[in-house]
Length: 150
Image (cartoon, rainbow, N blue to C red):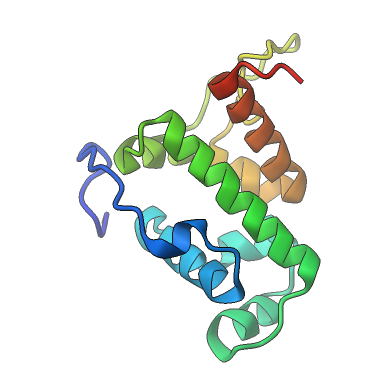
């Protein structure tokens, strides 16, 4: 079920060269890395990026073009993921749990300490809310990580 061990494995992340690169090839590698470890299909990215499945598939499998704004969103997603990974000390198992774990019910008066995906999983939040979710999750994790209360 988990290609790189169970989510309780708590394996530390091996940093690959493409983690910090900002090229089309790096984006492709980042998407594949994420799919391999978090066991998501192309549909996750199609929903999150609010893009046609054929457009995403053409980019991923046939050297098709992805618009600059969609490339930017993928870069923002990767940045958010790296911030989450850093927050959890690069423990892939813990981040996988955060990604899949359904949160408690969202309170009507939300605390800044409450993640924007409260009441659902980070995965569902990203899929359903799309680009806005990427930015909100990134802002929230950076706020916690660096005490930067926007």
